[in-house]
Length: 112
Image (tube, rainbow, N blue to C red; front, side, top):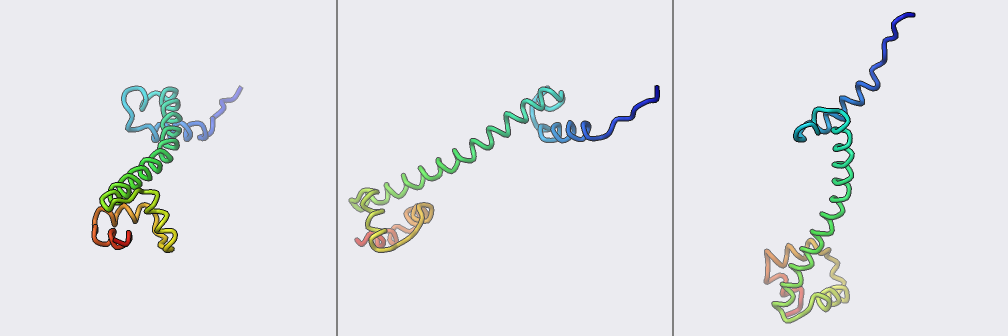
């Protein structure tokens, strides 16, 4: 029986997975089976945490806007309502930046 030389597909797949997990600790970066499991786990975590990061930033912006609105004796809800009535269409990220950096500009937005 002649010798069968295998292709490079499996080796390439294993090398890619080990490259993905190259910075992990211990066997998670050297042994293929544990590296494969840890790589899948890390990819699911990164996918989940991208959404979590967006939610966390949105919460932070709303908190900052609310704090600036309370300085002017208004609630967050009434502030957003008034901005929509006046057709001032700024997203929460920009409003939070204005609230932090320029309190005078923010108070003019409020109509004080």
